Image 1 (cartoon, one colour):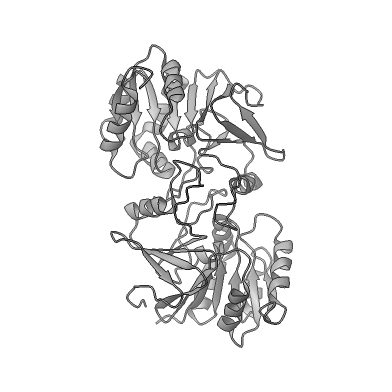
Image 2 (cartoon, chains in turn blue, brown):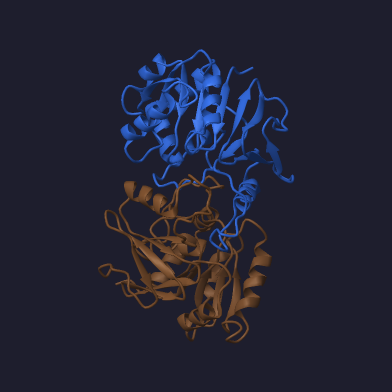
Length: 237
Length: 237
């Protein structure tokens, strides 16, 4: 069985409970590589912002020591020095393209399967699934291969929000889009609301945090899950 | 110079003013092929719904006679019998994939450049641009080639809506996503609000309808355009 341990957040600034969860998830491992490759803006300033949020001791931060993992500067060396990995948000297609071109896609998958803890946020959560085709992002980089890390057997839709009457009228809702995904593909999709996360280990996944998640299986009614509830899936290898 | 005449709607049920605009755009041409290939649901029921909306005489309908153009049933023959083309909404990636696999992509481009009027709605508007990477849709079919009809030199973002405080917090706004597009690609993007459309002919485009459109050029502040205003672009070939 895979040794993969993952914690996938919807995204947005981490709440104090999410910071505590990250700290608990990493445990004794304090030297965490933070990958900024999803950012199409300034990766350095993104890193600094997250560093300042996570390095202070709890409860202000998570008491971590962050290494900046740059996809374009000796990424495999930096990854080799880290005790855990945290992958940040931005554009999911840009992130996957850079994981592919840098060699990180295979290296990260191998290391996580061998026990390196993997945390993700938003785009960093999307790439943990089998593919990224349920991201909210646009494929502005024109990426043509969508298979991702496959650390969990379900796709992620972060920042999940049910149909909202204030959204653009006649535009598809998230549920419409997930139904379109299931018109073509069969694996489940987990919509994670802001403020929640999913933690997976030993072929089992559980929802945590202050909000909820909605689990979509092809041909079945979607199911809301709240903190402490496990995804209704058979254990995966 | 290309003979292309196009009218691109944001989408949603057509208002009476939009129906009148469609009728005026098609002019003497009443036999209109309606392409339902963007639908991942029931193409027949989609066709029927649109037929019932457009066939009655004005002002209830548009006084058109609709041929159902199916991508998977002799599409080139049906296209050959039509005096004009209307491409409906659904999933933009599914639409482009079916245009590619059926041979319609090249056939439609050639016919429109030779004078066949082209109207589109939502996904049908997206495919009129150089590429479809500013659609709101998800690439649920895993498409890997994104070049589209290129009937106009700008991309479309239909159902455009500015940042809305009721949207999922920390999720990117449309303007954020268009800025990401311009971090990678240079051609302009037109966000079309529900209820508006753009009409292009002879290398010039104009906004029409009851709402607005927002025009995004790389490196420039976006610009709102209302009905009757032309896109600030040099004439294109």
